[in-house]
Length: 89
Image (cartoon, rainbow, N blue to C red; front, side, top):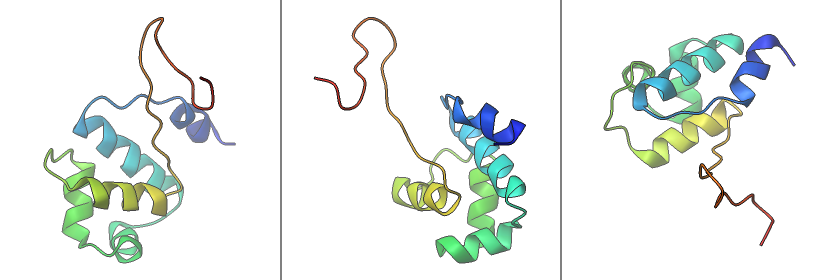
């Protein structure tokens, strides 16, 4: 794993802007330009640009498809003592 991968592995995203930063960093780490990523996802280059700039109204399904194309995954969790880890009841 690179230093980028280590940092992203523990990244908590709390805003569209933070999501955009993560998407841009991963895209660049994979040496993809916006057009190439857009083609993989099936969206326009402008849509990728908007996502990377933190546009707050991007469709969730397309965001998930973009993350999948980049090999990124979404994990949900709670802060505090009631946090539940996947696979534990």
